[in-house]
Amino acid sequence: MLSNFKVVLVETSHPGNIGAVARAMKNMGMDQLRLVSPKLFPHADATARASGADDLLREAKVYGSLHDAIADCQVVLGASARDRTISWPSVTARECAGKWGGAPERLDIALVFGRESSGLKNHELDLCHYLLRIPCNPAYSSLNLAAAVQVVCYELFVASGREHAGSVGDRGEDPLATAEQMEAFYLHLYQTMVDIGFLHPERSKSIMRRLRRIFNRIQLDTKELDILRGILRFSQNHNLK
Ligand code: SAH
Image (cartoon, rainbow, N blue to C red):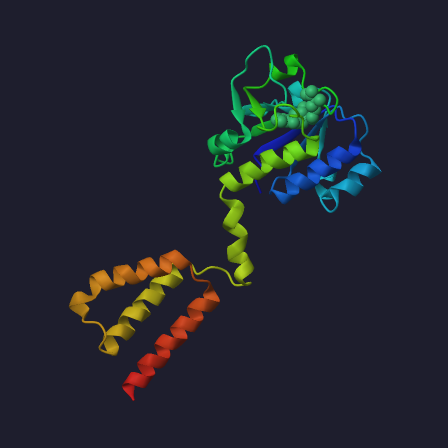
């Protein structure tokens, strides 16, 4: 979970949007939702639009002011579709992800989103360190609130490296082999290669290093390691006969 990112919604009018934001966040591995004086919350429309992310709604914290909602955060970004007359330092969603996507978990970062009708007020942006922009059609630049949250959270999700995290688990149920298990495997591999006459102990260093590189690239799980060790055992037994 990217729990150090706090999505803060300021005075949201439509409860359905709050639900859609919860869903967008959960899709991207975020779980910290903060609401500043929402017009209607809790509400059945929020729960319906959350569609399975209602745990985020139950856990959402409600505040009376933006000031209180961001008090514990070290970095505060205010998302705005509009160019402002006063210039705040600004970052695009992608730049934000590049800067903070890999931030350590102890760094709490607030992503503040404004009202559907009028966005964030200047005195609210004064509380933000950066203006956060999603580049888009300049003639039609205001995204739906939940769509804006989706884009920002997606960029952070990809930048945090979690994009590929699921693929390892999806391969199967088995946990990845530990370093200790891999060391035992390398020893077994070495011993087998010597036993079957493939490897001369004096010339073993560079080939073992290359073999390690192969296995490091693919990250074996415990089941796969069992299969390989089974083959090694079989070769050793076969060789003794
Ligand atoms: N009509 C409002 C926009 C409301 S959209 C206005 O004039 O400001 C609701 C919120 O979604 C905005 O306050 C902002 O936080 C976010 N948002 C929408 N489009 C965005 C964009 N292109 N870049 C950054 N944030 C955006």
